[in-house]
Amino acid sequence: MEIKISNHSTIRSYGLFAWVLLLFLVTPVPVLAQEAPEAPTLKDVLKDPAKPEAAVDVAPSDKEKIKKLVKLGPDDEFGRGVPRDSMAGFFAAVRENDLKRAAEYLDLRYPPRGYQKSDGPELARQLKVILDRTLWVEMDLLSTDPKGHKDDGLPRSRDLVGQIQAGKKRYDILLQHVPREDGVLIWKISKKTVRNIPVLYKAHGYGYIGEKLSEIFPVSSFIGLEIWQWIFLLLILAAVTIVAFPIVRVASWLVLKKKYALSELFARFINGPLYILLVLILFRNYYDLIHPSLTARAVFEAGTIFNIVLAWMLIRLAGLFREYWAINLKQRGRENAIVLLRPAFAIINVLIIFFATIIWLDNIGFSVTTVLAGLGIGGIAVALATQKSIENIIGALTLFASAPVRVGDYCRFGDKEGTVEEIGLRATKIRTLEQSVLSVPNAEFASMQIENLTGRAKFRFSPKIRLRVDTSPDQVRYILIAFQEMLYAHPKVMEKPLRVRFEGFGEFSFDIKIHCYIDVKDLAENLIVAEDLNLRILEIISEAGSEIAIPASIEYHANVRKPDESARQKAEAVVKQRRDSGDVTMELTPEQIRKIKNTIEFT
Image (cartoon, rainbow, N blue to C red; front, side):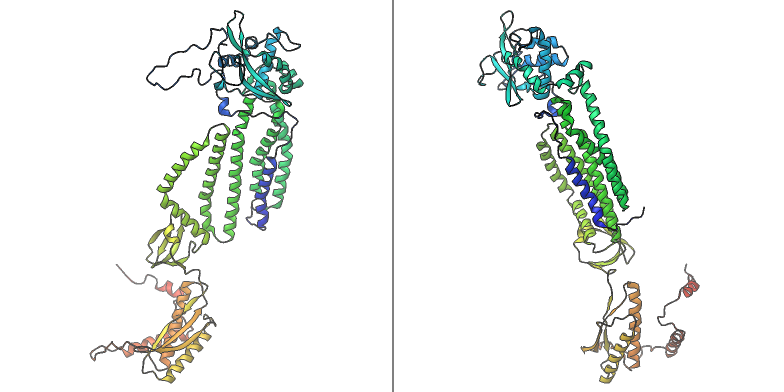
């Protein structure tokens, strides 16, 4: 696939499309169903309502005393001596589908209109459905006193279990202290509550279809859902999957039609996590149609699968942006910065998983404040321990973002020079002129004054020429004119700015200052051109009959050996011959280098 981005706004629109679609999907779809009551958390559901955490309240004031076994209420076959045990016994009976036993916890002395005392099992079943769907009973709040709670605003013989809303009216679910056949007082679900069961069941029961299906299928449940509810659940899931399929396919087809660099990746993103997330959101909006229990609602509201899919989607979306930036950097000639994308997006993926886990823990009922506080303290400790490493990573980000140098650039930093070979997360490796590799920590390197010599568009040529003090004024004028003519005539010297000036008088010389720019970008080529200019300057000075000034402090003694004139003439003849043959730069040709290569013997 050809890697190109002909329209950056179109690629960015892919990410915008994903977020807009996600915002649309999380908007709830109105469903014709009863308003869902507040569900317990998954942590609450995992508690066994028949086994409260504290059956006996023991004062911890005297820790040396051994806890004593305390008898709670009168002896009773069904454990109805105290409110908490009575309610726990009812839940245990209905969980085991022992409705006859569950009826023993109902005060059936005055059954509802149209019901007989023998209908106790049916009333117990209906109350079980009502409580499953509408009320989460906090067992630890129920009294363990045989006489019930005091000062709760209710008559002494009644205890409040909870309240259920039906229509515009709120109904109390009460436990009542009633006499057993032998006259012993025990706790049962009050006759007032029993008489309200048909009304509450009409508002919160399964409905006509649910009733018929519950009669057809075996009475069995898993996480609060009966078999017929599981069947309906699978049908809803199948329906939303079929409905979402053409939407996703059309969206992916439109993306592939554009044929951009990321089209195929984005289409896989739509067909993968985005499709599953769409199915889950649609399924969630129609979930109430099966009349789920609070237990099932708590399991679903924990959002375990939803959080996993959402985290998967965000990770894949981050991967798309990583590929986009990689292509973008490559097109801008900053391939070196691509190495930072992998660790940067790895950190992003870890953060996505971390926050998804925190949200999940909060959903299931755990207090994440303590966890976050502990992580905050641990994070400070880790940050202090890895301070230098973090500084170097930030330095690497700074180097890649501002890009003062790139791999392959020749630069000067501090009192050193060299070629950049690698910009890593910890250090930048530079090969010096001595061909040694110098590793400079990124935090230190980024704070230095860096001169990128490779990035120069031209090179400055600014020598100071010192002439002998016996040079006449006309000779100086001749040299100034000849320098200007030579520089303007040279093809590698830029016309502007170009200055040649008699700068002034030195201690032992007449000083001429040249200022111009050589129109080359490569350092090696600049050295060749500068060498050629220097040689031409020497020729002009020689033609003018002058010489380069020698410091006055240097003395020449008579016994010093003078230069060999014949050797000088021989050297000049060789140079003249090369110049006549067209060799202006005096550079060896590749053929000449090949002939003389390794001709010197060295052992």
